[in-house]
Length: 309
Image (cartoon, rainbow, N blue to C red; front, top):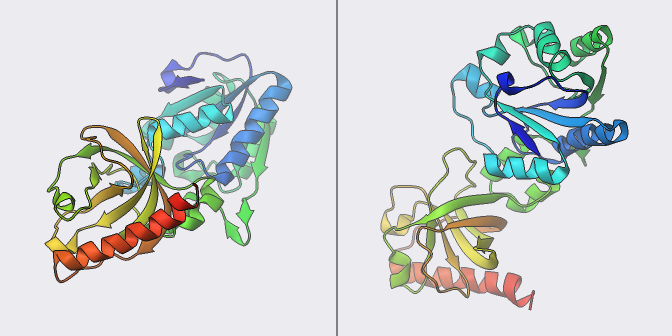
């Protein structure tokens, strides 16, 4: 898979089929758009192209930083695993926001990408003053000789699959529901950092990861997680919160990794959220916290480790 990071880097293509969008989560709705793009490209023996953005159009216009569902690295890996030939991964800036729909279509899609088919969602809009609606784009397709496929919303049950809906599930801690729409459990990745090491003093050592400020953080509470370390998979009890029993002031994500006893400071680990067990609570003392942590880990051990043995 080829990754192009600037519109200026695009060389004139022979022929291509293109899909455009933010693709901030690559959920099941996104996958439909990408798969249709790839299938058409294979059928016509031409290149499949995803044109996507490094930042959210919403953040560009509102100047408010938006949080993502997956990292940039995960996004590129997902595109590659789906079979995309070329990803044009560009900033959403004035070169995109302030250009007319027709100029973008002629200068980029027609002249540079030689697009034969464009696949877009039913709610896709782009260009200056949001003038590039699906119907407008379809009319330009007829004018410039390419076919426009407008894909209807993907629904699971009565729910329209969207990044906004998935983010709302994460914020609500409903991690068990996410895979229905995202295609997999929600994950966070980070480098293990040194903190107070309080857990060690009560028999529950934890791996604290450095927060990625660009990613959505699940609701405060205790979660059962899979923990990926150096190619190995473990089960953990992950706390997302402020450690109120010891008057913590900063949000942290810390995991007691079951059946594990290694020094992993400085290493990058990945957490896969399986189930939210309970809210974060403030206990009267460390002994009360210790008793609760024992109950949490016993529950996780019986459900996720004993079951797999």
